[in-house]
Length: 135
Image 1: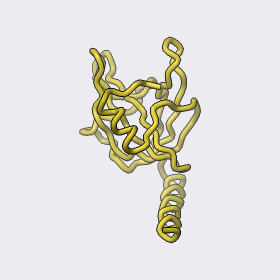
Image 2: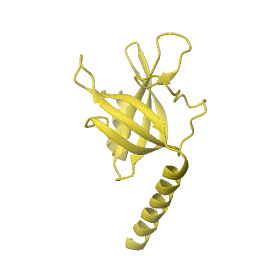
Image 3: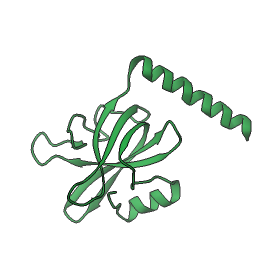
């Protein structure tokens, strides 16, 4: 439950993304990223859509030591927009609760690849077609 800056709050209100997230594992597609800044803390707000249709705002923060990357608590992937991770990629994201603050925290992210990714893309296109038909 990281509190967003004014720009982040506006995005969450306008587009329905949530940063107060229940702990657990989410399978979600990375839709975009924006910078987050508050006091001396710089981070990256990553916007995801889950396969269930939820919209999540997860925060990646810069590591304190070199190599400096914007990542989750487990520090495996760099989510900086100029890096290798592309918008539209699917991820298995684990969210927990920070012991010191009691807020949501992004613990780890693992890319979804291969057969599992193919199944998600098929499911995603079926959902889009169903939505178009119902309109």
